[in-house]
Every structure is written in C-alpha cells, then in structure tokens.
Length: 242
Image (cartoon, rainbow, N blue to C red; front, top):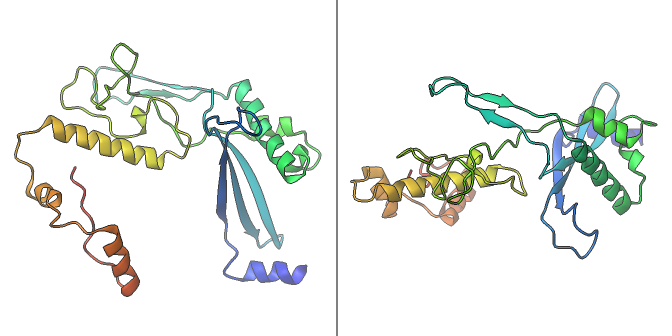
C-alpha cells in the first residue's frame, strides 16, 4: 500500500543496491546435471523518490560468453599502449541470455516476457537491444602448458622474459565461473610465490623475513576479536610477503 511505499522511501532501509546473486549451470540438463557454472542472475532494488516507487530488477549474466575480443600490441615499445578490441556480442550469446530469463521464469511460474523492461516488448528484442559487455575482462595473456599457445608458463612468468610475471586476471587460461576478484587475488599470490622461489638464495627484505617468521602477522580470528572489542580500527594488519 501507499503507507508501505512511503515508509520504504523515507526510511533508511531503502537503498539502490544489489541484494543477492544466484549462480547455476545453464548449458547442462535442467536437473540432475553436473555441468560447469556458467550463468548468473543478479537481483537488485532501487528507490525512485520522484515516482514514489520501489523498483525491483533482475539481470542475467553469462559467465562463459562465446564472444571474444583481443589485445594487440601496437609497438615493440612497452610505453605504447596496446590496442584493445571489444567484440560485438555474438548471436549465440544473445540466445543464451534469453535462455537464462526463460529458465528463471519457469522456476518462478512466470512468463519470459514478464522480465522485459517495457511491457509488451518481446524478450528477444529486449535482450538484443539492452545487453552490454561487462567488466570481467580476462585471459588476454593466458597461461599455457609447453607447446600450447599462450603468453605465460605455468609459473605465470612471461615466456622468454626473465623476471617478468603477469599477476592479474589477464593470465587466466579461461573465464572463471565467478566474478574475477577472487581469481585475480589467487593469480597475484601465485605470481608472487613464483617470483619468490625464482629468487631463492637472495637476502629478502627485513619486513618480508619478519612476516615469514610470523612476527608482524596476526591471525584472522585475532583481528576479528580486536574489531569486535574496540570501536577503533587496529593499526596492525596482516602482512603478506610480496
């Protein structure tokens, strides 16, 4: 009712935000399949004070799109920025985005057209006019086994270049079944570990050696206990050797 809407619009709980995500396998059997996680649905809400409405939205995401771009070196000079070519979405990806909404509609007892942002528009038309490339760009300097095409070896070292490592999502061999933040952290840790092992025998910086001995490192449990018992943020943070 209007009282509920007014309460939500005027209260502190009404925020423009993403509430939760759902990940699942799209290409495998609808039930009983063990396929890779390749689809995501984002649920979000927003408050429109002008219209006095609380809006809810659903967004379909392909975690393993077939559309691909490329990064091309424009010069042998490392100071010259490379050319990044973003592709138009392939027709097969439009079809798979449409399929996500159809699967969701089936699960919720709705019609696929119910997810159109304008009543009366066919879902296929909405998907093809409103779909866009998102921010999870990766795999442009992929790691590969010996004999396979790629930029990095399995230690994330650039092939043929001593001491140069790729420490971000560019080195991923394929698009992960998730957002890229956690995989990027993992690649950074692996690159740091590989670089450290490659310099075995050298004298490490004092802070790194201290961190390895545990002198400046606090456990996660200890940090959480400090935060819960004090309103101030502790200045001591766990240090990770780089």
